Length: 454
Image (cartoon, rainbow, N blue to C red; front, side, top):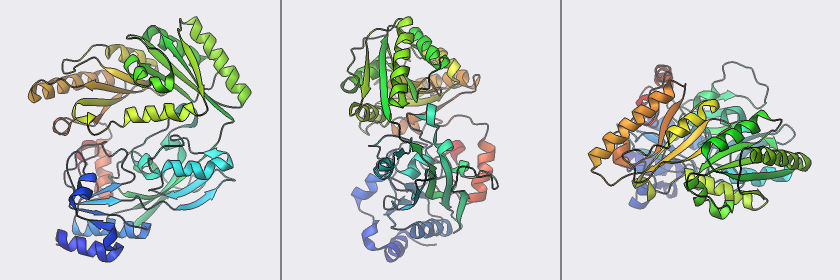
């Protein structure tokens, strides 16, 4: 079996010594929850990347793929970690068919560069905003949908096909290049949200959308959660077509003051309504939304447009992607629930947990039923905090399970994360285990990070 020194020499001969690193700085930069690889390699072509995946399969080296590294905090701590495969140089646009609104690009291409390419053609990929640094492959394998998911759909709706490197040396293509594609099983969905547990995504085909003529956010403050939820329900029931419908806890809204320009007090809730399309349509929707909100007791409001919108969405992304320094003292959990049951869950979250220094803050998508929950951890003895978090998470998951929901840990201190079940129980785990056995029988791809320890 190949040694790590043999691996380094082999990779250097294959991709060049300038693309292989074993120094402490590079290894630390590619750590996942404190666990570092032995070697970092950065291929320059998809053919090189596929050969490295095949090498890992032959020699049983545990491999963790990296894109732009914006969401490597997701998932469980790797059970083994020998080789970090950086796809940051795989940024080639394979085909851009603007007439049919499709784009084929390599996995390492940042979304912001897609905007630079497509906006001149009055098109965009609605999985983020014009400054989003995440790669196309990273968005796919983490199933990260943009803020406009309510109108444009999520990753599962926008991915048409993928090309994937497998540990047995095969490079497989699933899906197609067109929107209407019914050839065989829709296997590209298997890789969406998989964290690369079944194969390394080399290329992806995405469906684009027409760039709206106008894009605005109506932000409004409500005295209570009940009033904000009632207003959100009224908006959804009306003849409006919002692209996003977000609810912000007072602490979150306060942290976004620079972008929102609203004064928010404790116990108040902010509703964000994003409308885009023709100028006349957007104007009408915001006007009608303002009337509905006033009918439900709204307080201060404002309309954001132009250069202020990227700042707002950057504030949102920054809130999701916590800095490494903060992860040592907080717990962040993503919940999924039916939108009609959202108020019940948010009301439950008003009860401060025993392990928190303060109460719970949250950001909720009232259109899709997703909630991001954050708690600053107390400085109690580590064992007490672990048990309290375990009990709280168990109770929350039991409540969500009865409502066909879920709770996934996104951020937690590394010692605490290793003591918790990041994903929770999944009814699909046995089927996923069969896919893992088929595509990665020796568990060399992201071992232990995915659902059920796959």
